[in-house]
Length: 165
Image (cartoon, rainbow, N blue to C red; front, side, top):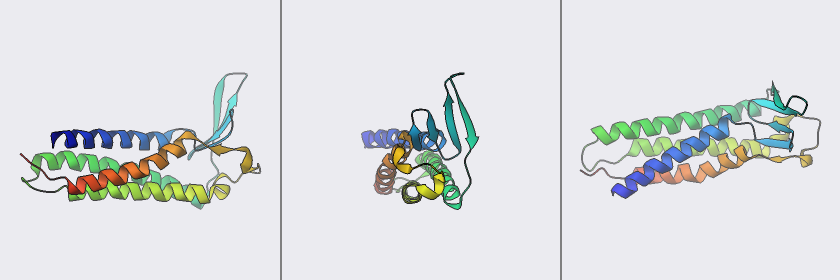
C-alpha cells in the first residue's frame, strides 16, 4: 500500500509539472523553426540578436476558452494535491479520498476539453493568413494531451485508495 501511495504522489507531481509546462511554455503550434505560437504569445526568432520577439496573441473566444480550461486544470490539480495532503493527516482509518479523486478527474476533463477545442478550432484560434498545412502541433500541445489519461487514471486511483494506519 505504501508503494501505491508513493506511486500516486509521484504521478500527481509529474502530471502537475506537465500541466504547468503545457500551459506556460511557448509551443502549442509551430510554423517553422523560427516561429511559434502558444496560448498567450506569438513569437518569432530574430537571428540578428538571437532572441525571441513575442507579441500577444489575437484574442478570440476559442482561445480564451482554451486558456481558461488549461488554467482551471492546473488549479484543480493543485487543489487536489493539497487536499490529498490534508486528507492524509485528517482522514479516519478506512476513509476514501473521494474529493481528491474527483478534483483530479475534473482537472483531466478540463484539460481534455481544452485540447479538443484547440484541435478542432485551431484555424479560428490562430487566425493567421498563413496556411495551417505549413505548421504543426508543438510539444506543449502533445504534453497537454498526454496529461489527459494520466489525470483521469490518477483520479480513479485516488477514489479507490483507502487510508490505512
